[in-house]
Length: 355
Image 1: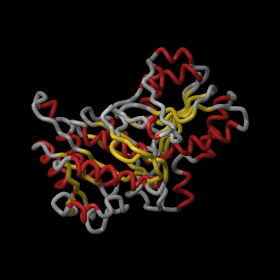
Image 2: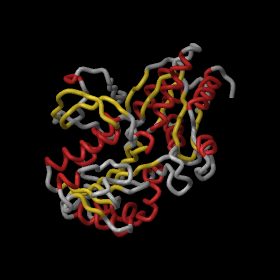
Image 3: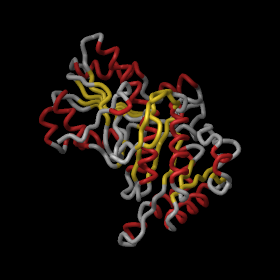
Image 4: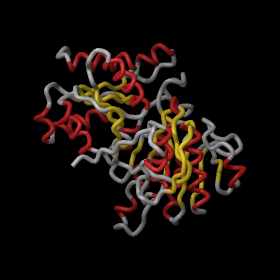
């Protein structure tokens, strides 16, 4: 059975998907993606004194992208901790704190800087529960502002989520909406294992309906954004919105694209993807990370290894980032990652048999 979960922004508050049955949701109102994250942080910190924040400039400055805002005034410097410019050292502190029973939330200024902390993330956080036979857990959340589109050039614009999704022991999430940004973060904070949350920088100012109070979005469950009959477009993060825009234009041509927001790279909702492919008989994978060895390769292999493969009427198509660092020039930067016109052309050609 498919595990696909559908959420609709126009739902009445009592109908909003709440995740684990323990949520306390009142009415929905519009927040930006950044505000939704900040609200989730505040809810978690108010509910559990073990939750605290770490990161560079997250205190008085409010974070590189102003996500933590005034939380230092509300909770104090012992729970909103500015760290030195040492990602490796600070990440080690976060892992150690999690091992003692605290619930740290570590914010990297840019996801690119996680490369400096890979020892603590990949060799420690991801493996300690396994190596100690389940005697400990590492309830750690790491937040990564990621992606291109801000003119920050090659060392501040990467999409490295597939690196982390390759590592057993880590959970990897990419919320695409303010609703999911809050719900996924609250679910991650409650999780006993390390969760990596990749937040696209261009989404921070995006607005959407977000219920008040506590709710969670289960990790590892895809979301049906738009039903369709001709092709499945599975996308992550900001590519969900570009795929939806493409689907609207394609509908005018008589092509009905089903758009799925993957939400989570690990765990991966393979059942939802297979069920959609069985309905539409075609698959296009859209993601910002470099195409080679990206999430699209795993999605393609997942379908090729399942009974959904027999339903395909066309080869699977991957649409990922170019084989180059992200350029500084704004036009070259756009050309380096999939944009809506490229998604339209790819889907149109696949459906009409032109490759």
